[in-house]
Image (tube, rainbow, N blue to C red):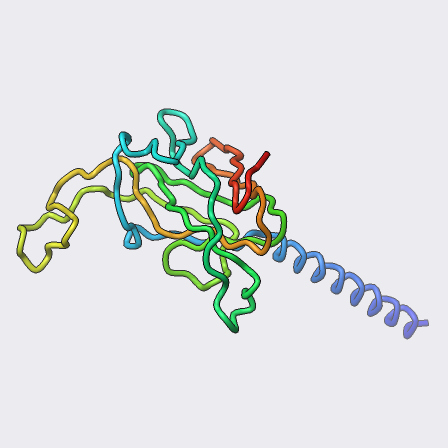
Length: 197
């Protein structure tokens, strides 16, 4: 009798343990792979006046993020031997208002997709967070060791911080992303290699 009770307890424990682990694994797999884009990877800063050229700002008070309003062209294929050879890259700058933090997450794509900005492991980001970043140049004298060409010393360069990068897809189509900052969330369609109509 004692052996039967001990055996039943062992089976129940194993079943509960396996069920718990399987559920935990599923939750981890369902979470987006998140990337933090660093200010050191900023390639440019632009003013509000330059924003209208193929980009649209999203969010209250003039926007917290700006993304392309045009169809994105597919370019190079994934690197050989990477496991992503069937993917194509659509390049676009990520613009975030300098005083705000913004997140961007892929919600739905025709196939598989991931984002690439900054210095990250290739194929690793379904979601990213960027900003806030200072848009003033370094406090230095032109010609000094601290001077960085293209960054006027102490100058305010504009409202929008720009990062180079884009999205990798294995199938062209409309990719739905979610832009968020604070309590604000905005769904945005990205036309990757074709229109979103």
